[in-house]
Structures are given as structure tokens and as C-alpha cells.
Image (cartoon, rainbow, N blue to C red; front, side, top):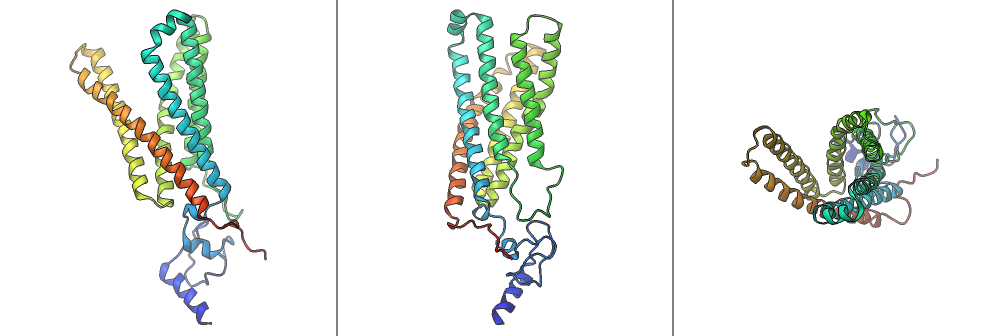
Length: 285
């Protein structure tokens, strides 16, 4: 009897809400279930740490992050090759063949990146079927933006194959219109990782995700402003900040690879910390 009273007191003092439906659980025995949705109260007391998450979902997080890291590495290789071997490749293949091969490569990188994003944002299994996900969430917004971005990558590839015509200009405008969605999906990845970092929990990873995100945003804004300034005034004064932004991009890309590797390790450790039996398995009534 005293043990039951201490359990109730623990719930009362913590003012715990149901982790799935938000029902106020104070005054209830932690050995019981949420009266609203049936989620075990003990699940809500221990919180939504990844160490207690679904093992298959953690595998999805790890595989998605591995795909994002692989796509980032491919993008680095493609950028280096285009920067230092473009002239030789154009001489060997011809300008049109080079553009087509570059477009195909970018499309492959986009497919790997978006595939990783979809794996990363797989819906977390609910403890009860009575709770439904809100129609507008960061996870769903990221997937929508990534899908539109993939359409843009496909249209860009079509431009390389299409003959010169009026349609090329319209396709180019359509590709430009998808770029904001690409940026939104990219920024969303960092916001999503910040949320996951707090569930590890690792505040340092959350801080790094925020720093890298804003680093990319600032560098791209500087490059955009420099390009507009150079086009409008034909001034060389913008060269120095643009060079600084390019150096910054190199630093943040390498930091991103390190950050993704840290999350892969964290997801694996969260799985290893779980008991052999599925920690989310609910007792049979």
C-alpha cells in the first residue's frame, strides 16, 4: 500500500502529462494507463528519450542519417571534380555530354539526399492507435518541400536533354521556383536534428546543429548578395566577402559530415542501451 502511495505521489509532484495525448496524469498510479488513450503512465514519466523509442524507428533514423552523409560526401566530390576537372572533361566528352552527365550526377545526389530525408522523417510509431498526428508538422513540411525539390531536380535534368526551344526558358523558371523549397527542406533537416538531439539527450549536438544551420544560411546570403552586387555595380569590392563565404561553406560542410556521424553514433547507442526485449512492448490485458 505504501509503495502505491509513493508512486501516486511521484506522479503528483511531477505534474506529468501523457506523452501521446497530453492528458494530465497527476493523481494516477504510475503502474496504470492513461484513461484517455491507454498509454502506460510509466512511459510518460520516463519521457520521450530515444533510449525508450521504437527500435525499428531508431534504425530508420540511423539509415536516413547515413544516406544524408553519403549524399553530402557525393556532393563534395562532384563539386571538386567540377571545379578542377571540368575543362578536361569538356574537351574529352564535349560540352553537351558534360552538362548531361553533370545533371545526371546531381539528380542521383538529390535522390540519395531526399531518400535519406524521408527515412529520417519516418513517423514515429505511436503507443496507441487512438492518437493521430497533427496534419501540419515539421516532419510533413520537410517531406513536402523535399518532394517539390525533387521535381525541380528532374526538371533541371530535362532541360539538359531538351533541344533549344521556348520550353527551356519556362522549365528554367519552374526550376528556380522550386529552389526555396530545397532551402526549406535543408533548413528543416537541422531543426529536426535539434529536436532529436534533445531526446538523446545531448545539448551540445543541438547547439552544433543550430550553429551549422545558421552558418550555411549566412554564407549563402553573403554569396547571393555578392552576386547581385557584382551584377549591379560591376565592383570588385564584393570579391573578399564572397571568398570568405566560400571558405565558410567548406568549413560548415565538413562540420556537417562530422555532425551527421555523431548522430549516427548516438542513434546506435540509443539502440544498444535498450533491453533485449522491446522497451515499448505493452503488457497483454
